[in-house]
Length: 227
Image (cartoon, rainbow, N blue to C red; front, side, top):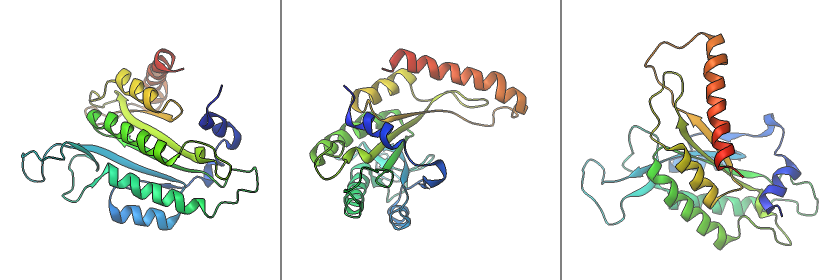
């Protein structure tokens, strides 16, 4: 039997590509407010693991914790993932009130988040909390009024080594396994590292050997750990 999310993916198949608007790097409170005001369809945010207090190496009772930040630094006022998620849930509830639930057309009732993990140790605590809050709020279930599976979750990490890129800090099997364990119906976004260790290869080379290798590695992950 297919889950609600799987059925919903196929029913509305998202919108046309040009209709899906993205808010990128929605990490800080200001960026989050701007993204909400812009009514983006997708909110993309970066997640690191804060291990010590700002400007010190001292531990704290609530550390380590996942926070919304992009490498190489974590801002002093970095928003905890738990707080960021509450803003997302509140926004999702508010846009629900404007949905027309009298029609079967769900194309206009799609909202999603893409979590870009930058630290392997941030993945599991975030997924555990997201799953728990989703269960409390019934975010991924159908009821008589709202198709909550219109809330889409994308999970991203650079788990492969790209051309000129550094070795990934993520274990690809571990990341995929964690995603399948907590959110098997999420969109799994596999990325690869970049860098400037060597001059970029000619276009025909990048489109050929390198791309084929990355696709092959991706297919191996999917066939071994996917459903």
